[in-house]
Length: 453
Ligand code: UGA
Image (cartoon, rainbow, N blue to C red; front, side, top):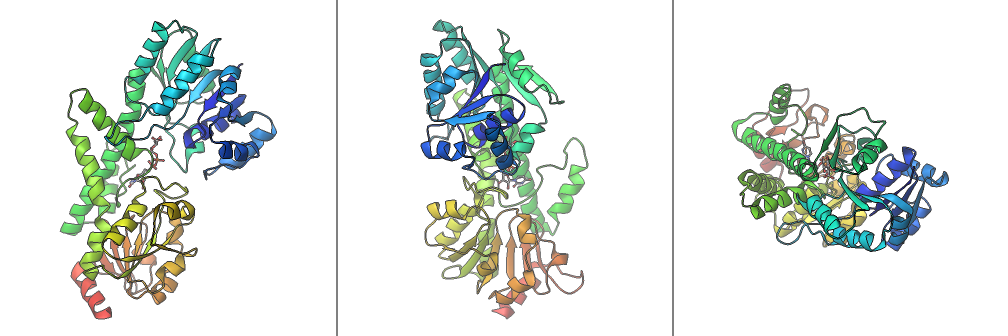
């Protein structure tokens, strides 16, 4: 069996490379970032991803995986070349393919023997067809092209690679598809063999559908707040219908990350460029943007003007168990609070170093309890179970107001100390009282806050 090359050592490339090595392949990973490669070569991962570190170290020790900045070496040594470079959003919402194009150029100019190019990066629908045509028209029949989209969630990427829901392989001809399928031989899941165009659209449509589910349940949550319903019960009741299913129905302050915001916008743009106005996606995006403002709206309802007020924020990454702050709602919440003139004290268990690079004027504290010190409210911006385990009595004692805006609905009012005013997304406002008898009318909570201040 030949060697596998992976070009691009970001989340997707690194996880793909290390996991392919773990499956028994010889893998060489390339990236132009010297610092990243120096670290990886001695087993230091540039990203935090659960389960990655031990298999990285083990496969390095067993010489199943290696890292280099010499991309020509990767192209020469490997006969299967995974491309996993970034496809960021341009100013007009399309995908920037410059990194992908430059890797393809390099493969074309370096490869002399048979190569299978496997696209892992999320590329616009039609990209595979264009590359296949280009290879065909330029006498590059030794290069085959396969689209093999990834469905990895950050924070669970190793698990998602090793235990996928499905494997999608797009392309055809010259045994390339069969060779790529063989890499995933041990997975007992559905394999979808199709065209590159279908494979590309499966990726976008999956992410766009998940984002739609989130925006939908968030709108239901906002309605729940108005009519006095509880979105977690509503979502549970909906989710028992297998046609709906219970996943991705967690209401909150919107989706973030390096994938959903980018991919939903790119799909909308792609539709537009092909003469179709994808109305639904415009609304999904708009609902998500509005949802990020919910904490500020709620705080204003409780406290009035936010100018000069001290607000604590717990959570700066786009989701728990990652240090990734790309398109993070927590970061946006901080910026919105600052725009209102509030002073922000913030904590995150993993993302603080990155957050410091993009936020100014924030007091970062290395201890979640310090976020509470003297603040008039706390906003929880990520769904991190860590926050449910905090000693909320201790937090309550040092807060100026007992107000908690739980932007991810992670706190259980029954486990909170008496006196906390808990405002969740689509679950109303509750003053936690002794026993399980808390009241859920906003007026009661507001009156109590007024008394307190
Ligand atoms: C997402 C998809 O879930 C993966 O299948 C896909 O492979 C990946 O994008 C990608 O395209 O590479 P990821 O961005 O890592 O994965 O994160 P998710 O766990 O999907 O969460 C995304 C955002 O949605 C987070 O901000 C999360 O807080 C939010 N979310 C998720 C909700 O607000 N409600 C939910 O019910 C679920």
